[in-house]
Length: 203
Image 1: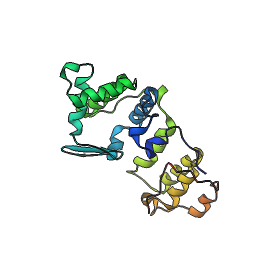
Image 2: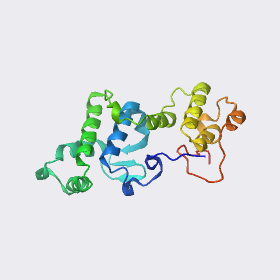
Image 3: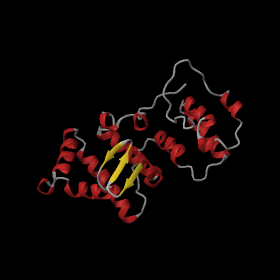
Image 4: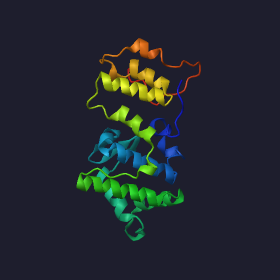
């Protein structure tokens, strides 16, 4: 059994076609949740080289830091916008999310310059998302005790297929001592497959 989350598409969809992520309230929630987790924990989500970066399968043939600096600089300044930045901000205005996108870019750029973690606005944080991100990306001190806590966190949220994948289908957990067979008995089996949040990485 796998209970779908409202933000499922963050992990398993084409962001260029997602209407959910374009809504200002969803962008705000994701940003504040990322801040609570710590953006530094999510660095592996972005592949960066000198003139290319890749995010969620989207290739952008530009320098990541230069793009963010220029987006901040050109917001509401059409006189200095090149075609790329004009088109970017026009799309954001059409989606009615330009102000929150600007806020996110401005705050993200401040992390780069100060190296400090951003404070977050708790009323916008989605604690379920933060907990799931911790399981997936905050694994520096992973041990059997934390693995068991992760299992029960997934189970608590109704993500039983994800919990099963943690037990049997995730490389980072495979060498840890867990009573896998007894933990598996706590999961609800269903005949309907729902794509899990925590995917199988062993195949």
